[in-house]
Image (cartoon, rainbow, N blue to C red):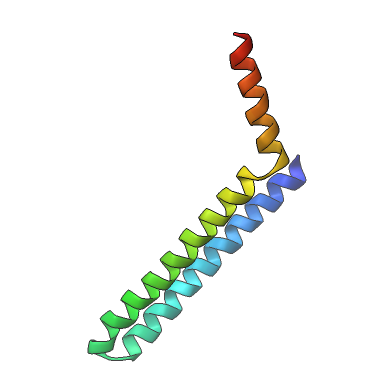
Length: 84
């Protein structure tokens, strides 16, 4: 259990570090592009990142719903509700 907790903590730390680095780089490029293109660049970056995250969430949900574990859990919860 300790290895899983350590790995989870390192994964979250690395994700936070990479998210901060991405935000810093996007801010740097937006400021370097000038006043007019700054708003356009930020809007496009937010749109692209949002589309990526929504797509990733939908794919993870579909993978979870099609997994054997989810199907067994759904079957057993149905059987439990029939018995009671």
